[in-house]
Amino acid sequence: MTDWPEGYGRRVLDEVDSTNAEAARIAAGLAGPEWILALRQTAARGRRGRPWVNPEGNFAATLVMPMSEPPDHAALRSFVAALALYDALEAVIGTRAGLSLKWPNDVLLNGGKLAGILLESAGGPRGWLAIGVGVNLLAAPDAAQVEPGAVPPVSLLVETGVRVTPERFLDALAASFARHETTLATYGFDPLRRLWLDRAARLGEGVTARTLRDSVSGVFETVDASGQLVLKTPKGRVSIAAADIFFE
Ligand SMILES: O=C(O)CCCC[C@@H]1SC[C@@H]2NC(=O)N[C@@H]21
Image (cartoon, rainbow, N blue to C red; front, side):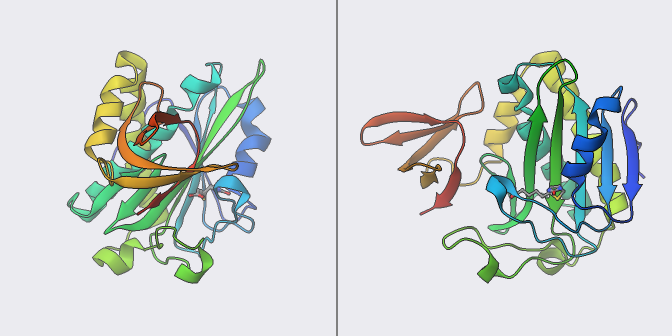
């Protein structure tokens, strides 16, 4: 079994509305980072206010950390979490074949969405960051439930035949997260940026970034030093801080 990382708390709930909502409720009383794992969520949420379909047996957890860093630096945890998920999945599957990362922080398996991450935060003297992680370990939602043109959801069980419990998966994820978090604290974002790019889906290919206001198409050139997506478009380079990415 993977060793639980020193300095990280862990609580396991049978049922909760959303582990991110629970994180917001307990954050002010925490002295250090705490993983919250839920075996059932009744009101799980995804990015951009979308609901997250979370059948029992899938992985649903949030790491909540007291946070005093500027928001842009704190948000780099989205890459820390994506790399940690990639490593934990590689460990349970036994290979990295078929795994890739989709900006900003989805994990793909065989081209389908296997896992998503939702970052939420609060500032102020008792500021915190919540990193919510959902992985389709057993079952994926119906492809009809996702936005047209979005990557279709897949599950670990159907794609690989591998069955892993949420508790065991948390052990692997927490250990990988702690390792990448130490890299961020010691060496900064650049080594993580390189690892992320090495695992990126569709690098050098055409993608469309849809923000709440508009849509930009271009070649996915890189991720810059602050984690923004850089697209090469006919009008020049465009850096994008937040968007949904659609493959062409
Ligand atoms: O839209 C996405 O891709 C992000 C999905 C994040 C889902 C997880 S499940 C655990 C945590 N609790 C929530 O309510 N959401 C996140």
